[in-house]
Length: 369
Image (tube, rainbow, N blue to C red; front, side):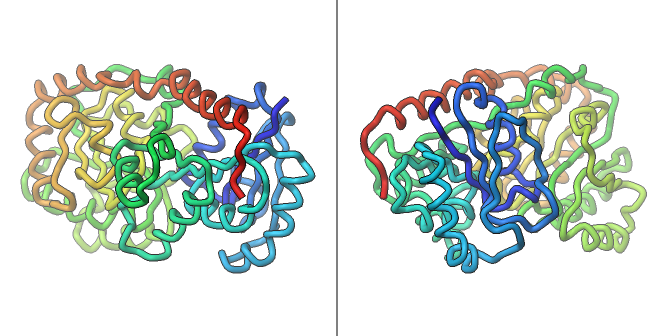
């Protein structure tokens, strides 16, 4: 059985890259001898569990910054990859791409950098740009989440055709099985995600404040937690929106939370490929989202199954939400069209793309390093 490894910077924390890795491994574990490697471990225990068929390894079992990870973890990572006979490595996420790319660049195995974000989202921020430069250049292939990001990689790095490819994240089968009919009587908005700057919860509060001036017939449920939770909670209180915006914390039953809501709203400053929008579409929900650099435009067809608003125009977003809330028929029409293009995100379709990439790389005779 061919040996492949998935490397993430820290599997003891929850995040989009870790979740994608946690979805991929069980889907492929019967086909390959899979190793999951965490470069550091900030928290006690991993945040995700894998079956006994998967070998799990932590390089530095404590919290470490990038510089320390590069210095202290290089020999241990290289030794592990060589001793275990790893033939193909996936660096999952920008931090893993940077560290893995630099630490294991002389190890003779195939390497793939999986950019869970988007190149142009943070191109002007040097640390984030360097992560993607090293992760990509020290790998045989770079896998991105959107066609927009694929185009950007070719434009910025002048790679030969085929070096960068787009593979979407798939939609979890449990979401599809649990989807219910759309509730056209609901006036409740829904947003879910980590309370961090890039998710734009400060913009969300501004949208809510503007919306409250246009209509009283709305509520907004928000799921998630994070570093900015208390700051956002205080801002909601200061603007007198406590009775309208409900902060509901983390849940392990997010699939059920889409029910009985009218519109899914995304106010992020940046995204890769936001899975929450796919989940919302699977639950037949119209979407209102900022048309940011990468992500929403590949999921939402403006005017058909949702509305794309110019980035960060909170007044315009509030206006579009108010109009949709007042138009039950329009929301119902968008709900019916929400299944359009969902076949692009089917699990088996996407898994076959990954299998094809793995076969191509393992059958080749060239190694990076």
